[in-house]
Image 1: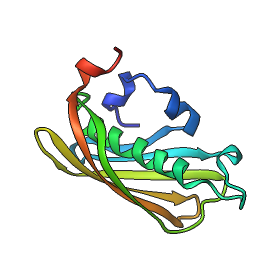
Image 2: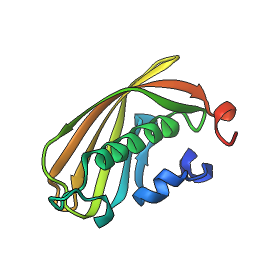
Image 3: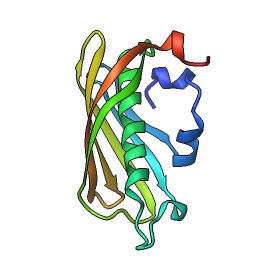
Length: 140
């Protein structure tokens, strides 16, 4: 496994809840691949994972892509995020990928997708992220 800034970054409670796990990263490209646990507790009455939980997974994929690309120097807060739900998500493993499309001085633009274990595209997102110095906001 490639070493990234995430190796020394404390995993927040929301990541624990979602079953967040790093699978792969290409820091220079601003690309990251993660795994999440699509838990039955995340399901709506129809038996599919509720959209808000999928949105949280997408958000928790895009921020780390910036952190990895910036070698741990930049932390993000989401300014806006647009999510497209493409297929119902059943309980089980969910794979997330994100790519930083532009890293500016104060704002980053990121895109992400979630896939089922069989490769079915579940949801996509784009976001604009405010950049903050990680040393000033993390661990306070």
